[in-house]
Length: 403
Image (cartoon, rainbow, N blue to C red; front, side, top):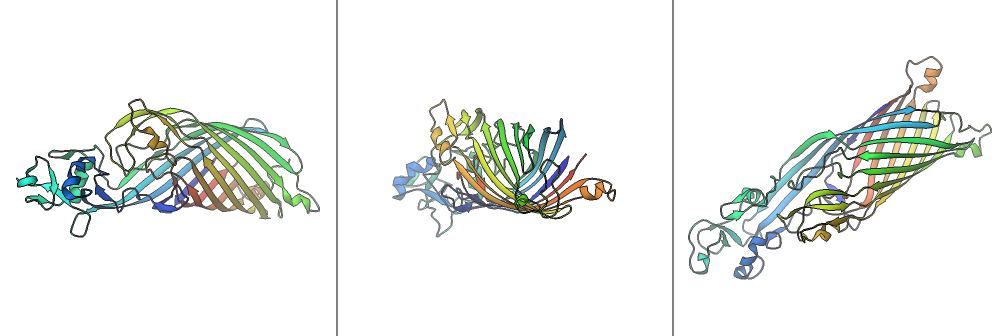
């Protein structure tokens, strides 16, 4: 049985399609709110001699996570183990959002407040700023347009862009592990399991929410290879068939391969042209890309119970496939959804097992302090995509009790 808490450092960035770090709100920040974003402005393009704009947006997101992982494993035999992993999430998004429509901005149209004259007498709610009885848009006006709308201006039905916080279960994983080879130098095992989509999924009507589950079921397969490198030079080799390996001077290298087959599912999404807001909603058929991970790690035993470890992982995900039934451009949702990640982790572990066996400590515990950094990656720019790759770092504390 183990408890691990991951204390994430605040992040405001993700890895973009070209492998560059970019702001989480880059799709909304420093943008002209013109006719390419709000299609209702397109009839005014000719009146302003270009692209009608209500101003410039300024948006910043900062995500904060805290994840508590509970895991329990039971040895059915000396080689076969069954277990469950249950994560619990606390997530926040600290939001700064405003619209600049003042002099010097891109704003050239505003809200009509009274009767116009000449061409400005058009029966529309938005007119060029040069027209009489026209005022500039405010941040609250734009929030209303994104949400329920303004008089004579239909809204898009989004929730307010503001601070977000929520907590709840993550995706639960149930599985088993079988050690199929155990020699003096090697320990080889394979595991499989099921990922249950019990975590919070993205809300298509909330541009500032935080999700932590794709919403799709997954079938997991893994292979694990442990090799005692130090047996090459040690006068008295440490046999891998003795568990656990904890003799000073032992160096163990592990290679792990992970594969997740993400099962097809359905989800309600907004589907529209790239970079444009839309009210088009559809329950589409999804086939989120399968995931592959290659992990290499080494663990060195400094003294009885104390070990140092380092880990490197490279992972990639295949592209998503979306299919709608209303003629909306679902191919937009597939763009750049193939993703990659690279991370490293350093760990310090201490086990009381040697003391417990000697009768000098009441419980056999493993305590691990870790630091992890996802230092490279690539993924989609769409904030609501389950395939985006966040630029994150965390400090982890794990306590495991052996029974």
